[in-house]
Image (cartoon, rainbow, N blue to C red; front, side, top):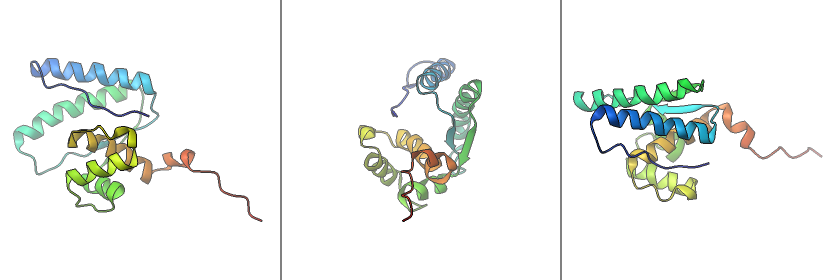
Length: 141
């Protein structure tokens, strides 16, 4: 397991999107995930923010689809509830809980990066994917 952030803060927007696609494709190739989880867009964002997010989201979905990985989408409230127990948790609470649940991700300094890890954790906690990670049941005596 790993966690981190892809830096796309520099350059023209199209170049940043291309970098996002290439870097995410490398991550997919490296880790070979069998499923992907994304947070549904938040409706309260400004029109400009929503448009920029839609472009980046399309790139993410394309990179994952290129690898034939099914994508599961969750509302922000559902992910917050799955990870913190509170569907109205603040971003900083999600970040703190992600750091507690996955100590190797303690270096996550961005709430956006923590949200991405929370999407994976929320999917793990609410889907059948976690079945393979549970300890085997003890034999009945």
